[in-house]
Structure formats: structure tokens, C-alpha cells
Image 1 (cartoon, rainbow, N blue to C red):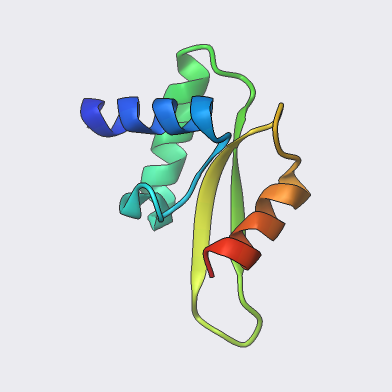
Image 2: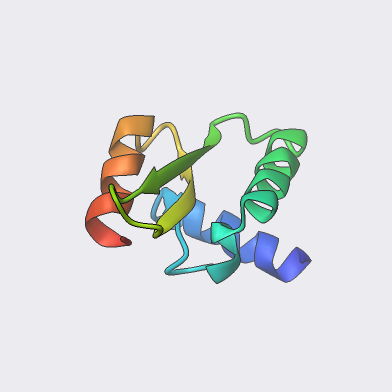
Length: 84
């Protein structure tokens, strides 16, 4: 888990958003929530979760994003355009 956490932090610092393209486990709601909680507990208050799902489709995805680089709406749009 620590190695994944470091990869998530590295990606957030470089790109500002982590999706299943970088960490496949991010699509697990529980995993995403646990990582978000750890980030908050470690003092990273600017990292948040986004969720997107295609209409009339079962495909969905989560992301963790840096609010200094993306708004929630932008993060969702990013997921819809680049991931789903």
C-alpha cells in the first residue's frame, strides 16, 4: 500500500489528478475513500474525490484530484473525456 500511496502522491504533484489509468485500484470506492482519508490525515487538505459514470451504462470511475489544479466539475469532465 505504501508504494501505491507514493505513486498517487507523485502523480498528484505532477499532473493534479489520479485515475484508473495510473492506479487501477482507484475505481474501487473503498480504496479511493481510504486513500482520500489517508491524504487528509497526512495534511493534504486540497485533494478530493470525483466520480463519473456514463449515462445508460455500467461503466464508472473515480479519481483523486488536486483542487488547486481542477475543480470538481473539471475533474468529472476529465474523467468523462479521458477515462470513460
